[in-house]
Amino acid sequence: MKRRLATLLVPLLAAFSVQAQSTWPSQPLKFVVSQSAGGSIDIAARLIGQKLADPLGKAVVIDNRAGANGMIAGEAVARASDGHTFLMTSPSALTINQHIYKKVPYDTLRDFAPVTQTTSISFLLVVNTASPYKSVADLINAAKAKPGGVRFASAGIGNQSQLAAELLADAAGVNMLHVPYKGEAPAINDLLGGQVDFIFGTMPALLAQVKAGKLRALAVGQPQRSAAAPDVPSMAEAGYPGVAVSGWTGIVAPAGTPPAVLKRLQEEVGKVLAMPDVRETLSKAGADPVGSTPEQFAAFIRSETVKWGAAVKRAGITPE
Image (cartoon, rainbow, N blue to C red):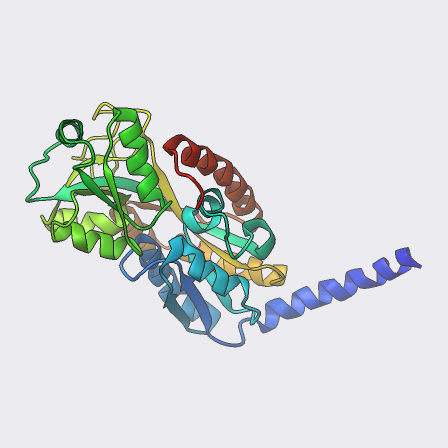
């Protein structure tokens, strides 16, 4: 009887999947962004969302819900059930929070269905152009001379921007003061205003200010130089080859979203990421388009969870 029931269910589920794909979307999509406007996730979400409107026949609404290191946005999407709400996020919300917070309002593997990794992002260590620090060595020497006197901003407690700076401090054997913000944009604003000394953040959110002469780039957070900023030395050149930090953005849906919907959205996003103008815009900002399948993104999330768990432990961040 059970075998017969299972046999009968297969064509029914297949029919449901086909129907879901053919009738979806039936309303505008909502990309809930786990960051304030102007951050690297927001930049990717707006660029992709604008290009999706034509092929999907529906507008894509960007809903910025910054705060709690992405947990506010994550919880909102985990509870959504309209089939049209998705989370555009970064490693913090999906792979880091469970290592730094005792209570996270969602389980990444249980409550979300991966859609696609959208970009891979370079990191950039920058200071205000009025800063006396002209190199990473200058920054570290100041931290050695006055422990806790050098202040670095981050997009939130446990955010990659904090972990990047903590890894540098650990490698250099110095103590620096962490100043967390609710997203990259307010952190960058205070760096521009001189309230903090540096940020080790995402290149898409910082490069425009560097090119405008408002911020000075000291290093890129990778072993080699970036094509988007060829004049900026790598962390290896700065003397810290072990400090390699890169980020990413990706889209996940609430668990239970029909596989056909996940596949359709992934395919359309992949087409957008393959557009020459989109690739050029992202590359110039320091982000490389990806467009992985849901299965590939799921495996990537699992590997990133292990990686950042080790980084949190190495940085000495205690769950709170």
